[in-house]
Image (cartoon, rainbow, N blue to C red; front, side, top):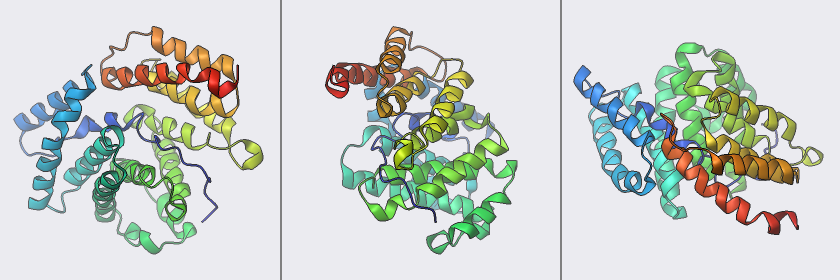
Length: 292
């Protein structure tokens, strides 16, 4: 496997994990139940009080566990479980031991879903990078939900182990899966793979093996694909690329745009409220960071 980046930001999935709730309970049987599930997930995404979501989500962790226990090979349920556990652990859990436990489950659900869909991935604990890439190259558009669920749950798992060198060796595989998602359908999940790849390519300067200009391209594409509604794309563009490149004008412009924006937007309200909180913290620390 190619050498991984030596830095993996602790908040890698914090900026987008909540948007993974879109299919939270769609796997439940019955048209009426699916309508309730879709309404529930939309109400979460459009919530402007993150504390309400934080307090309510554990009930749905238990619910999805029960559904999977009753039907352990249901791919849709496994995808929902991987997404829900990734979202909750990445956004609302600060205790590192608890985050590791929750993301273990997220990755297990995501990996099992992928194995059911593509058995050649089942030996991922001992795969060679070339074999992994060969299997990934055979995937198609019908595999997108399981590829994305596993990639993002794996990213959440890595975030919870950001100080563990052995875990960081998995970063290239996660990047490869996200790049495959874009190859198959750039619009899948509203192009959120661009946001992941923007951050992952903006960890190190080019002189140390990073790819910040590739990261910049991904950030700009993520912003364009959301028509500017996803404020977290701008926050992460500022907090990763602009800080890495010591570009304070870009940094401050992006964050001021975030703070001036109306956070209310269908499907983005909750993440936008969180983005504005983070934007304020980044601006408040800018003098210290840039030395002005």
